[in-house]
Image 1: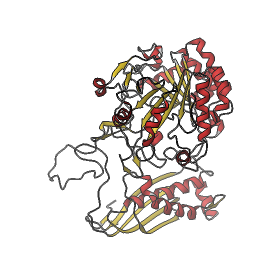
Image 2 (image 1 turned 120 degrees about the vertical axis):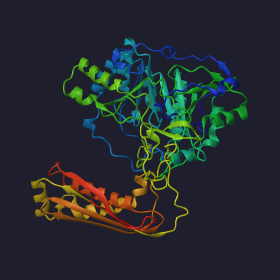
Image 3 (image 1 turned 90 degrees about the horizontal axis):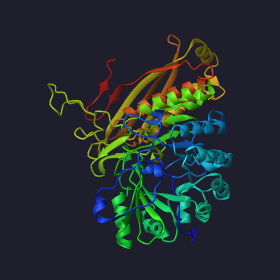
Length: 564
């Protein structure tokens, strides 16, 4: 039986990793399940694909594009995001060269991702060429897609060698689908899944991000779908980041999901998991399909990571959560040989950390949980907590109440927190921040000569408006800042001939329970960045410096002025 249009939606994320199931082992039956040969034992790879923790990287994820034809609410703003120019993206030839190189070193699985890979015009031709690598050691060619533009392309993709498909679908309700993705297309997605089943693809997976109060009520419907359909429905724990505070309300832990399903269907069969699986596999007894749980929040699974990533613009990322990237695109365009590329790749792999950089501690979830980048709102900052001390253990002459401390972290656990201001008494508060941008002589001359008029408009006026807007958006930019009703935002910019700079001073006022230092700093920073943006055609050798708070009033601590 193929997928009923009223039933389904497939997988979005495939970057997360595996943590073997533990506490459930005593309560479920363990049943072997076929896995890829390379997943049952540590794969053989070259030295270039081995890190210092003896992890063998035989799985390569290649992003083909940054574009996407959906605007999922937890993934992308409705207007989209700035895109890299096409000439800076990897060409078909560059993708194939890198794929051949990695396969020659022991990579046995390649997954094509995006953005949405099917919006790339040459997707079929790419898959056909990549499929030929199965004659040289590649064992699996996979794709993650939202399914919107997939159905008509799928027969050619399968004929070209595509054997694994992950389709992203978070709801079986067409109306809710349109709300969550901001686009129509539910029938197109379900049609693509039907087509994949009809074509008897070896591995068809549906990835569902479960969010409490949004789509968690559909878990049992997804489970029911596996009765007649040989697909793997995988439930992914939602990373609960909401606005400017940590919010666990939308997280539905994997064990709760298992309990819900077992309350309806009885005890689940526990299936075998591969060595590098990110998924805990189960099955409703007697059903054709499988259920999977990706515990991206409640259990961490870095120890068996075998993944490397190449971004659409050609950077190699050894960790989804790491900031370090090396441009293989630039190396290829500079004429580097394959041997030189392998040295660069090997050096990057050797720098891979034991676990990812973004780990946030929280007692009520587990000892640690990871923060998937694709679930962070576009304006959110990444909090890197795992290697940083947030308090001092040294002693001094002051008692604990008087000693300086970081109020946004718990002094005992180091976990992030928003400071409560509920019981504070509102007072009039003001903060002033300054900064400047120094321009080269010619750029400053042009700026002054044209009285700050460029093709983009009046520089100082636009910068002033940008600073005002930034102050109002501070709580959306700085995760643990409180949203405030601001009574005054005064951003002033002027030219200083002596230093050949644009000086900026931002004053912010409110009547509230917390200060406005961050709003003043944000206004100054963005105003100066705007000057840079509008003058960079004349010169890029500009320097922004001296951004700091110089004065504040109000609050428990009273007035303060900088001594600098």
